[in-house]
Structures are given as C-alpha cells and as structure tokens.
Length: 258
Image 1 (cartoon, rainbow, N blue to C red):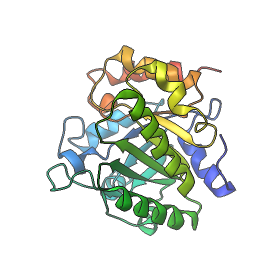
Image 2 (spheres, rainbow, N blue to C red):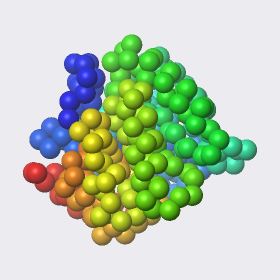
Image 3 (tube, helix red, strand yellow):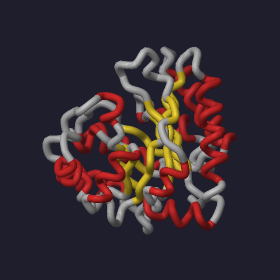
C-alpha cells in the first residue's frame, strides 16, 4: 500500500520487498524492557541475526542504533528508532514514556520511528496524547510512524477482537502509517481483525513469546491471504536455535505472489 507523501513512501520502501510490498521487520528493543536476554548479548550476536537477506528492517532504541550503525550492521535495511519504553521492573511497566525525540532519530539516520502502546484499564489518555504528539512531530519530517498496539486487559475472544480493532482505528484516526499487533488466537479470526483497516494502514503481526515454526508459518500465510503488510518479530528470530532455516521458510511464505 502507498503512504501519504513522497518522502514517507521513499523511506517506507526500505522496509519492504519491492515485488510483494511485504516486510519482515525484526525489533531488537527488548533489552531496555527485559535486560540482557539471550540472543541480544553482544553486537556480534545481533549482527549474525540481522544479516539474513529476508530481514527488510529493524527497530531499536537510539543507543543500539548508534552502535549497530557504527559496526556496519544496518546497511541496506530499513532503520526504525523506537521512541518510548519502560523497564519491566518499573512500577508501571505498561505505561511507556518518551525516551528520545524525532530530531534524535533523524540524526541517527532513521527511515521511520515507532512507539509502543500497551493499553491497560487506566492509561488510555497517556497513550493517545503520546501518539498524537509523535505523529505531529514526525509529519514535519515526512517520517513514517509505526505504532505497536497491545490490549493488556483481560477480555473474552470476541470482545478482544472488538477492542483491538478499536485501538488500531485510534492509530488510524491519529495518523499512524503502520501498526504492529498480536495475531488472534485463532487464525480463522484474522479476516475479522483486519477487515476495513488493512486497506488503510500497513498492519504487521508480532511474534511474542517463542512459538513453533509451524505456528509462525501459519501466521505468515494468514498475512499473505488477508492483505497484511508482513511480520514484525524479534524473539522468534534472535532466540531461535536455527534462525537461518526459519527465516528461509518465512521468506518463502511472505514472498508469495497473491
């Protein structure tokens, strides 16, 4: 799909396969949240993970982008600077605070920026204010914005689908270009989640905790079948025992013609 504005489209083109318009983005922002988890122990370890040609882009905090760029790891891939965050050991880990600026992201050579919005029962006002401000600032520089949107409330399945669609629509109303969110528990519900939204925004499904190859290949196929933009998966890449074989399989699915 096309974003609004030539500058945005040029930058966004660095995150997608030009033939299929789908992408495989690998976020590596987990260290701020969880500490030094396996797979992200050193720049060399991360470099081996990101070297696979199936990976079209990455998302990282400003310090990691600086280090990876200096090591020559990011050449040829879309670079997204993650703007907000909160440690899992903080008093309110789901309320993510701004940690850097659009100007800093531009200085680092970012092609886009991202924010994470975990919606609990009492932080909606914070999340909407943060997202609206980020979109306004990014628009000045024609930077695409990806919102990682998660519903942290406990809902039965049908209500959960309604809520996540509402939350994604909020992102659309406030001007985001792309959304990353969880795939529904049943892939039969993917069309219901994406209906009416996938034509307007690039929607990626996340990986979350480690899943089997077959589970994630199923999610990738559902993306292709329903017009999604691709996968945005981190731990399911850099914590895998054999990431190369897995990425080969995922690429074969995502690069299908529709």
